[in-house]
Amino acid sequence: MTAKPVVPRQSARGDVENAVDYYARTAGAQIAIGFIDALQSTYTLIAEHPASGSLRYAYELGLPDLRCTTIKGFPYVVFYLERADHVDVWRLLHAKQDIPAWLQDSEASD
Image (tube, rainbow, N blue to C red; front, side):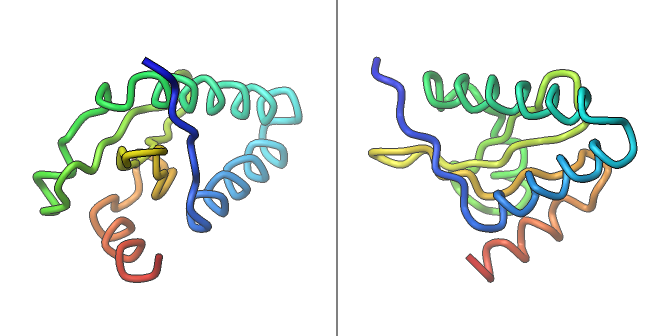
């Protein structure tokens, strides 16, 4: 199977920028770089195996096929949909955020 391109939405790109800024400010550049590396590994995983993510929030929010996966070593969750020709990344949220509320806001704005 060929990997699909991972295409983050504007909201997901903003989430990544915020997380990297936070880690750079509070934990240093090495941790911020580690976060970027872990995120890239997560993107590679979902590009190669898009069906591997959990459907937990798809059921909870009534958003068919919405999948999520965690970023190894960091308390963040990537939310995405598999499309015919790409992986559509909706959000990247901290695991302690009110995830259903954030995702519903994303659905309305993107």
